[in-house]
Length: 117
Image (cartoon, rainbow, N blue to C red; front, side, top):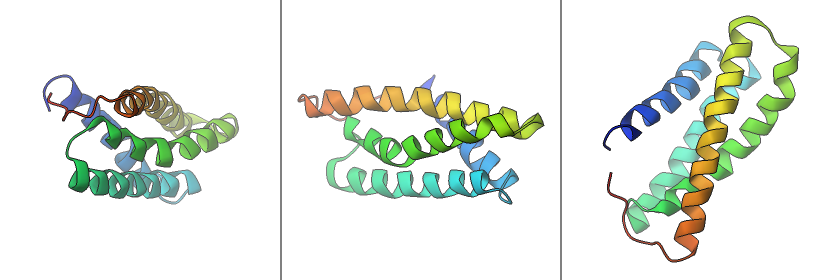
């Protein structure tokens, strides 16, 4: 991937895996790690069958939508760095969900060409 998408992916990995590992003792940290694994497995299966296409975003839509909803409900009861981590996950994963929704809709409307960055 080319700039800026490589940095975007790195940021999402840092927030979800890094934060998930740091807060692994919490249900939210564990959820971040499980959701990353679920998204990866779905996207890997799509990649094997279709290649690097816009449909890959469905992995995030399936895994991160419940995660963002859960975090949104829990963030009010938190404070400190944990609060900032949850907010960053909500904001960045939420933005990623919007991007992925656009990609999946474009794919369903016929834009089935491989993505080249």
